[in-house]
Image (cartoon, rainbow, N blue to C red; front, side, top):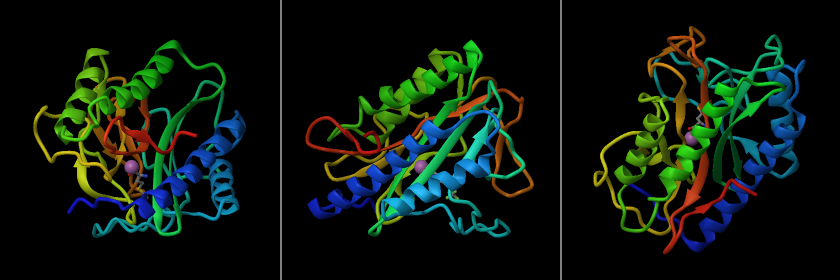
Length: 256
Ligand code: MF3
Ligand code: CO
């Protein structure tokens, strides 16, 4: 069932999403070569705490047999890592890296989910373009995130835009509804047919999250049970915001 948030619940969503955005701001200001991904994870956790939130990712149980609970406060995926990279004090960030940080602040019972791919130092032109296309794919998608439209309209717009730029979307992972739970219905693929899926209604809160690969769309999972990498070793980027469907244009809740 897709939940429609009440006025009160929307205010709580706004606040959780504000903390998510502030946490990204802290990471954006801190990230530099020589840091480890565990350093960034610590900064994220401290920032959430400062604003009265905790990480919804830490201890998250996907409910899949054999997959351990998620051990860190954030997901940090470097270069050919697509999503769900586990922060580590052995993983140093270096000049030229692209670093995807996906985090979910949980405050007063509600979740705010957002991801960004950060450029560290001198990044290649193609990596920059990949990051920009991934971000733009989100904005192409939400042009259709309006009352009366269908989820498929959003998915289709994202997928077609990415294809038009010569990159690939990940097919195995999707955006999602969000609220009291980090993952709620509906599922929101980054590709699909326009005119399909449920109709959007005011009060729905959705996490829209294009995951884009420079080369082939195929992915692999590492033995840690979490980290997703590109099969062909090419770069990947991620851009995600939590949005609110309204009577008019959607509101992006995780941008300050
Ligand atoms: N934040 C991710 C998403 O965008 C989910 C992370 S999985 C977790 O949906 F285990 F880290 F929580
Ligand atoms: Co998400």
